[in-house]
Length: 350
Image (tube, rainbow, N blue to C red):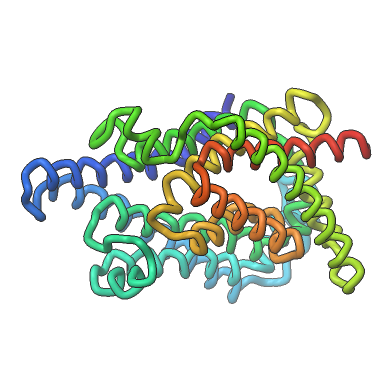
């Protein structure tokens, strides 16, 4: 229960941010005035400014700590276990990089609040740099990079040796995370403000799939599984095998799901619901295929920078193309079949 509450609270500020952005856009559309709804917009900017300021200060303090840190040994840390001490030492040794993982996205978030910079960056994207919903979605995407850079700076090996990680991907926690993604997607496209639920579903590309789309989605899901395994074999043949640390961390994170039918169903259905609604449904029509696929890839930070990351990128690219050619629901079918097939293979192999 504590983990579920933590997941909801972690995403609550972003959901609130997107709600304020949509209220601003609703006020502008209803009044016809480009400056209407300034109260909601200013509130959203203040939330972001405070968040990025705290991140920046935390990043700078960590960098200073890393530069000034002494040569303490795990056995010299009273009051904590040796395992916890090793984790603390791993963070301390990489404090400069961890600080940068906070400071760099924070600076990016500050810069994206400047209209001129935002217009420059959004030229190649189907984004309106003056639309508050587009603006705050783009700025909020900086938080995705925080998670990715933090994982890289701490190190996959350090995370793989951390106890209790399986609690982060228990069945209830994973459903809480993905349902929160789904709620964020709905509210982000204007549900509760500018659109009713039918209009929000239509904007997300959530439609009743045809029989042809069901069949195509199932076949495409199996095809992506073959692609993933083929890429692994090809990488090993070329001298770029899957990093054993990636395998260890992935196994530790997903172990609660691989051991039961309910876990495997959760692995497929929850990710298909939440990730597809958010990335392919809400973001892709505004961020474009490439940027959305990159963000989808870095969300899977447990793969670090590895062959698995490249596989996730191409899987995300395929899901994005399916969204363009068909709809988000079909992409959900593909994603669910892909994840559940991998889960069944791991279960049978174990």
